[in-house]
Image (spheres, rainbow, N blue to C red):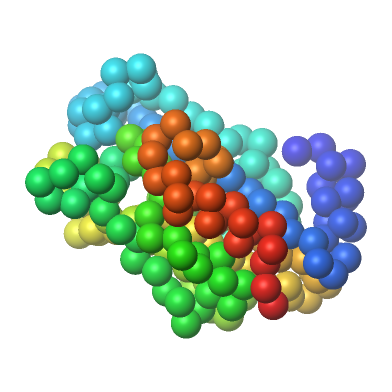
Length: 197
């Protein structure tokens, strides 16, 4: 992001009622280890995505400039409800969801390679994970090998300091119905544009 873009967004976020939606996508195969790249490739199972496909350098530079302590990493396949092809429900943290972003939202969509929004600062009142998605436990991946079962799918940063606007992080694919979850996604979109405080 250019200095002018960063300055414009920073200034805009000083206005009450603003909300910056950041939607960094996956970072598949970010290693030089070809064995790991193959494991990631087999995990997501999408033959159209190569063993290395890195996104979000622009968004990452903007996040760094705005001091958003989040790093998009991996490309994870969501779990499904056993015996079906339906995506497993979200783990929602309603007690943290003051803007009610996840009201009537039980799932996101079944995109095969969703990013984990890794926090680079401790979770706090100013950095809240509102939703986590279960990872497919039947496909090996370094993320699950490390003992993780869910990835951070929705993060909210309420206003703080000089920033009067909100910041929301959620993957860009959740703004299309190509991968299912239509009713829940409609509710999510409505909740986002009518955020309650």
